[in-house]
Image (cartoon, rainbow, N blue to C red; front, side, top):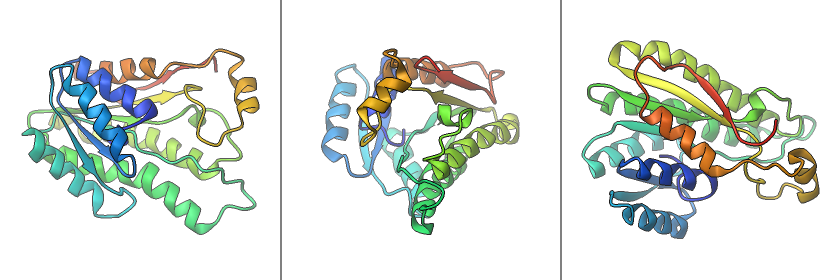
Length: 227
């Protein structure tokens, strides 16, 4: 589970633990939060390990998947959740911002999935976490929107590419679930109209895809909020 220490990622981890799955919790900077989440997983009677990686590094996805597989003795489910959400208006977006967003939000999920497919034996599940942005134009977050739209395309192409190996690939696209760090509170209230979604609902959707039958693949499920 990439990006599993905090916020919606944490809710997904706990949903998987409630389903009886051992969980490898990836984090980058949130070490203390990852340990807390791991303790909460262990309290549910399943195993949890925490693994640090900067998934913007080209070699990090494969190393992370290998470490998770070794730590847990196998790999059945990959959840690509780690992401960044910087404000990047068209006129002022820099090359460095573009590369950071695309590297973490799109390139890393591809190579995590590639490594996971090699590690999965007898089938498995890949779940990508996209965003409502794939259906709405977030003009202040263009690289983010492009990367998340790419995750939808990745989901559908991998569903076909990995079908013969028994690996199903699906996507959860959260709506207005948690106000992003730094996002103006007044603007958030106007967008949600007082009906903010729940992280637990995203976790429930991921849990479904982590345990769904093999003929449920290539799907995109929008969850949360009133949009």
